[in-house]
Image 1 (cartoon, protein in one colour):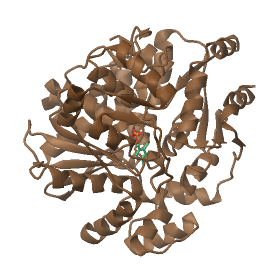
Image 2: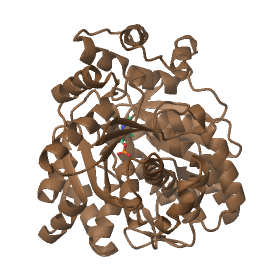
Image 3: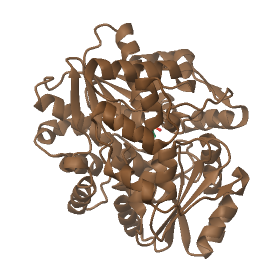
Length: 492
Ligand SMILES: *Cc1c(COP(=O)(O)O)cnc(C)c1O
């Protein structure tokens, strides 16, 4: 299958090329030429385990990959999750379910894709005959960084460099990244917010001259951000898998429509749900849940994407984003796959910080999505209420999803069943969660975690406990216009 750029000036001849390149050379994002109808195979998927389902969903796009090798890579990747299940569905009440995506090595949903991406990338490089060393540059709002570092640690022929906003991640997230082991890794804090990091990294990607210089050093770039289709495609699986589990558990009948509510930042996770729908999955609405950085809520309400606004640092830092990269893929579909219009809109976003869609396009969006946001007070209240009512501990991001799901139900009373995607363990943000539950602040992350354990009975994950005694390896902080120099220093 070919992959085309949303901006029309680049084509990848197959998925392997799209994945190894990461970003298209015209600055656009690669999208599949068509969406295979995986729902045709739903009867078969019902009887499969998660890794098998993943190999079917992913394999439907990655035709050039050997299917047996893909299956065994999925099995290996997903054996790193608790009980070999990256996506258990937990029933809260008859209409509400939580899809727990945080049982992987770094305790956020990014693990579902990033435990598998090293295989997709290496295999892709071999299919494309790439012999150079691959340098992966990552901009992270907190969770991608650690999940990518963990996935790529000591991967042969690959180096990875992570940029995170110095003040924009939680203590636990920072500690997770800065203690990362491995010979091939590097982590740098950038002064500024996530958007600054993402812009700086994208700029390096589209720097043709720099690309040539690196090529002479036998190095090519790739990306582990959700701009890379290889990051996105494993995320489609859990929408299908959750649906199958609901059918198998007798919660729904095959063919019934359900809703998914997704705490959203860069629009990668929810876009995977939109893709699942294009592949036949019976989804009613996709609920786009934002925090106080509610640029997407406004976009879905009035059709204007306006990134020129105040940036808020919230308790859900992985969603503190004003320029949601993956929205470009949705806009491309909305434009009837017209790359010229899409490229123009993205140019406007870059130059003026704002672009618009048409009234009739807004109506199309309204049929597919519901969008709203939760402010900081609502997030705190939701965590407290949810624990009191169900004894279930939400992290700050998932709380945004739950809060907006409640607004969704208030708006569409007969909306039916909704699955809320739970994107992180509460122990990645223990101070905020503890404060929500007790009203009292505790400064130290480990002290807060201990208190949270005592209060809730939910055990702190081992992967975070051991951080306390790990050596900090990285503590460099740079200006955002010095990212290229930092890359130079890393590769030598
Ligand atoms: C990355 C992240 C999100 C946002 O996901 P996008 O794909 O960027 O929309 C939400 N919650 C957590 C915990 C995350 O790490």
